[in-house]
Length: 217
Image (cartoon, rainbow, N blue to C red; front, top):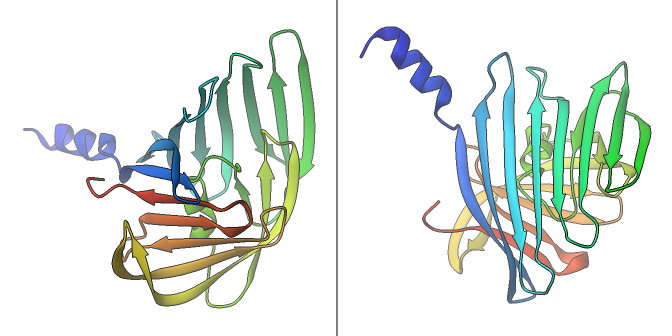
């Protein structure tokens, strides 16, 4: 294989990919498959597909987030496959503001959110996006602006690296990097990452939700 093909293959290979099992209390309510890869230009692409099928109708969320070399969100394409209210969401960060357009069957809305400094795009039902909050965490509290495009809200959250702590993943004991995200509607979110920075578990106590990476991923 030529050197050029080797470089192209390396660029196409995902930096991380896996599946998260989403539970509320102990009941499985959905699964999330995600892929983090290098973008064609400087930066990364994070794509996720979450399927919630415990109840009817089945809802599928599919955000694709382009992230710049500065670790800030550049553009967002987010499809919501819900037979009651299908939605396409477009977002873009420019000049200290994050603009969101929501395209429904018969409606179109737009909103702008102030977004200076450290900015992340999050969603209450898409858990892989939280790895971007962990990228900003340090031993001291770090404020970040979070844009919840689908919910139409902006929150100022605080992320902090708590160091290596004991937890469990799929009922197995593990010592992982613990990052907390505090503030906003969710109040507190626990992120657990391995030594390579891969997100293995997310806990949202206020809504009794957990998302754990399946063993094979």
